[in-house]
Length: 176
Image 1 (cartoon, rainbow, N blue to C red):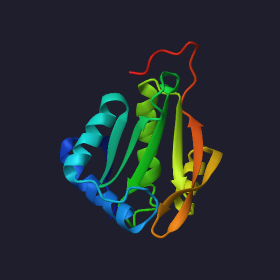
Image 2: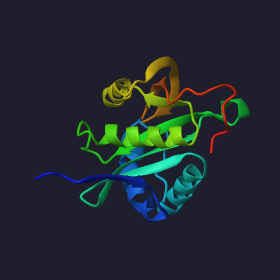
Image 3: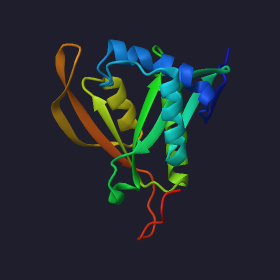
């Protein structure tokens, strides 16, 4: 049986599911440094903020949301405005199914359309699956923050990588 995958813009109606997908990463892993899972109401706000300037996409399998990816500002300083930070979360047990790659590729296309040139991603180490996905999608390592976050009784490193989304004439047009 073939699963039907669909990638679409997230809406506030996806907030509860996105919060449920994210919660086990918050409570049981150091993949995210949040300590308390966001509520559905908080997730509504996150989705809306990301949609205003960047993007937030969800991945559906047979009509059910099983993952999401989003872009946000990399830093608040104006000179960084053509760069964005990206993140992706899949329902536990969904790794290595091709959904993450498809979701990220759709996100990169959307961010490129909006005028962004560079995507950066941070990955708490160890996380071979995330490191592998980002490398397969053209991200290159740019550095590691050592012992930067304390969670689950241990210090954790965060590796950073980046990839180009687009090249354009200089000076660049403002992101939309």
